[in-house]
Image (tube, rainbow, N blue to C red; front, side, top):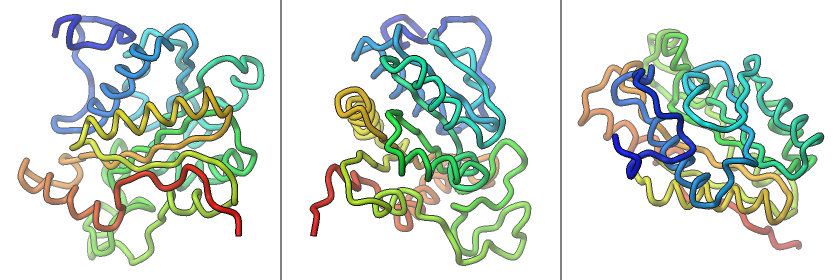
Length: 242
């Protein structure tokens, strides 16, 4: 790949990435990296990476980056922002790090309106550890721990965070099959952190053909099914007070 197609904030190296074929994470990172370049944020950005598929990018970006314990990425980024308030803090987590083991940190960061941006990658399974049922798995979905189908209870993280408080916040959900829209949502989330000095979040619906056990056509079909349960769009810029 040439410099024209690779974000400048990426580290150029000869080693291949470690994501599975067809994974959606590299698409999300492409959108994030281009925004960091175009917004000239490279020297201000701090990225926290959760244990899981997110950590495979620990050396992709030529910015300050830290791996954290599973589910603890958000408080690490909160702490960094406390001592470096002019920085741009980004926490990248999966559906487990955001909506399961890390849910308490996510909720409290939202309640305190911490000036940070959270990117939650939702691929409906626990990808790195073998495709177990996640809080975002679709009802009836076959996973390695739900061989007869996942239960009916799914977490609508973006909706939950939207309705928690009656205040200004930026929350959106994009998808890796619409890079332009996803890039726009991430840009607006970063701008919200910088200009409003408040909390922002983008949930990203992502491919995981390895654990979905799908071919290319089936993978696109499964993502479209996810969109029916997890509608794409901007959930909240400002909620009108009653």
